[in-house]
Length: 207
Image 1 (cartoon, one colour):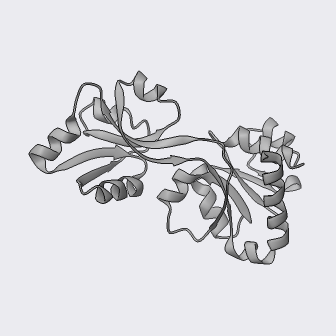
Image 2: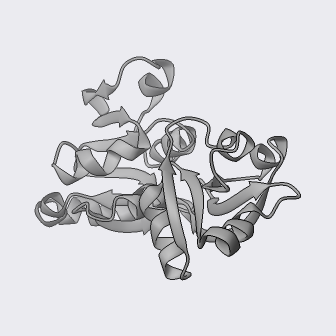
């Protein structure tokens, strides 16, 4: 069985979990440049790419954040298990001391927000009955309201430290996110016993 493992914030805890399941990740840990480890059935990639590889069967199962799944709702993958680690929250934030979003809503009837998660942001503002203009950014979203590009941001926060260091304050919480185990639908059917066994082993080590 091939497993898609996310590099980045979920990387170490995912490898710790695989080690606990008896999968030797020592080569993965010792090699930052190599991406495919056929001897242990692991392929590593950006968290946002995990659903793509799992959907198309390049990996049977994968681990990624709930934020990625909420942003890529059209992916045909099965979400099997909340793994419990990698906790963070998706929030709306704006500059300290300002109420730029409320002011824009009052004057213009819409707010402008920057985010790496345009679908999540659009759904949140639609669900709360507000017009929004989404500015999609790839890098550090925190600078967008500081430079006057937008009124606020939609982004993930774990401790709130990055927001505070950039003089931003949280205004709204959209959702809580953790690492999730996902599976390719065909693999889930053809390798049902193997995947079910893996889930039971994960539950056992997490207990």
